[in-house]
Image: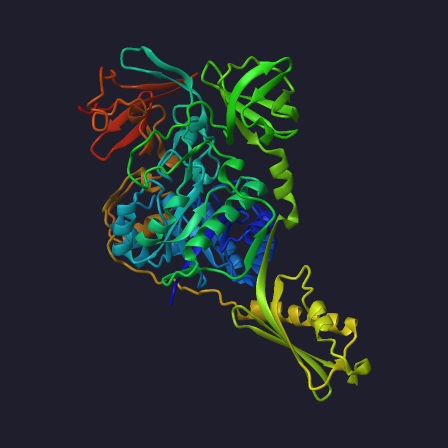
Length: 619
């Protein structure tokens, strides 16, 4: 049997979930009323239920995100919500907190969120043995590490393919809570990483002013899809539960077409859901929100990944500014631009600035405000007005399930049978007197024309066969009625035949790979503590949110490295290193101040609060 490969799309709400399905998503992930890591993207049980019904029609799945850490007084509320989600037939829950494995749960599939910091093969195998059916891998992993995990753990693996990157190891960022009590692990990240900072060396000298030193580019590993599949990935996840519907449709359609071209004729892999999509727009990742793209570490560390000028969307490169003429700009490839577009460029202070296009004419742009921009400046479009208008249309992405229709006569009238691409069959009978056509002429072509009008149904009639014993006459109204009924019934049959995978968690006591857990394991309640203790853990530190030491805490661990970005890495830039920077390096933004610690052996950087003390590693 071929292995199914899945595109997993974000759904901020029901409307965007349906749009993602229509654009070709094999699965969507969505927030419930509580406990999702995006507190601004919650949904009612009723809306999730409606999305489940729509998705299942296409054999697509719905995963609900419950990936915050939980406090003791929330455990029962969470448990009850899980039962509600089970009752509406969601396909899986994406979880971070191990307390959920201790609860009285229904037979529901559990996935380990990337917030669980899934980057170690032994720990991922532990999760699989504890009953987790899928693990969402850390974004920082490379192809070799993914292959090792796949070979070791034998569990479904999900990996992010496009979208924003969290600079920290997921689940291990505490900058937000340490500076304002808004916890990322509780769904309320304040995004301190996207702020501008000054970089100060150990001598107190400012090396860089007012730059977004922790802001990194967005992820795009779509070109690595074949390699990632061979390494063991079965699900490709798009980041973006807070993004708009144009972003979702653009990303999904782009990946759908890219993956389909790889799967076509493939003997080992196949798509994970039903139906075929058609689009009225040409998808391209740079036409919606992006900060520029990086493949991050999937092919090891080999390029700069920072987006220091701005944390905002850079968009699509248009061309250089040729010259300023009167109250307009002449721009290379300016004929691509339209009235209402938003443009972006980097000014002399190395900061992103924007202008709005009032009118675009023959390669000249007339902006809302004429700013002084140097000739030769790179111009980007970060708001493509015509593209947005086109993609926002409901009919810009349509998904249809292929069917064949067979119309026959019977003793008392006629029968219409519909068979879909998955082998489901629907049959309706029409009692109707049989009369021959005038002059005994065949009206088969007319009947086929009517049956082919599938309209707003989720079906296409790709093959229509008429088998009559005589040239019978059949009124158009009756043909249309039979077509409507056979497809309504087919939808009911498809939903009845859809099987939600059931998986009952059985409590185990196999040993956890560690016996001592620090705060980075995010243990915030008694049931999570009980889970780890049953698996042999003897020392468990409380979650950061419950015990941090103000001003002295480690607030982030990251694979991203400012030394590397500055080309001052003793490993990668030893031949061009020049003068070493005096440490500790400090990030400062008004009253916010952080020290940087470089751990070169694992190739990681730590961020500490200003009063922390630590030893500086020798190169």
